[in-house]
Image (cartoon, rainbow, N blue to C red; front, top):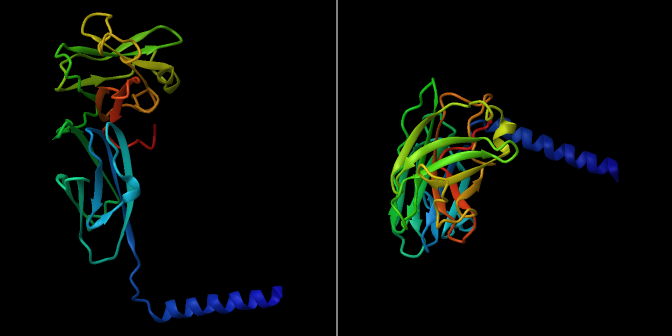
Length: 257
């Protein structure tokens, strides 16, 4: 029985190889990866469309961050891919990008922030080989008072400011270099992020400590082994569910962190 199975498999394999050698012009599919990081601060569901393909299993849910990444297969001869984000209910187009499939680029990334019917512009500055650029946009309609953002090491009690005097509803980019007490990846992972009223120790969001802090785990704050020439933008808002502050990365997840 085993011998017959081996013979049958060998026959199928030889047939496939024979067909492939006889028709060398068969086109093979290529692929690109398209990714989004963003935040949907609305009561609407959103959907991403790749040309005419809609991934119904990846509907962007209301009032929270999202991370969507899809591999898109195509055949030679196709030069462009049209990527859209739409309001699932109304069909309104919120984002439209054209991806070149003939450039040789294999990965594409787009940040997207949707707040109360408005798409927030995300235009990071150019990278600087001498430093890192960290950018923050705070959505907090309850107050226009400026806010400070800091790292707080839970083990050592050391504190380091990431940005100061951020007025809600505006982008602020700061130069950032790892410093003593926050040099290693291990140092960073022991920290939380605090949001306080500028120049004070008062909690920024509703005067609440829990709502005015966030975990640092997935923020990829530069450290001595991952530094210089980085540009990283973040969208910040108190969690609509009343949890800690939400910080959404608006840049691709680095592979070398």
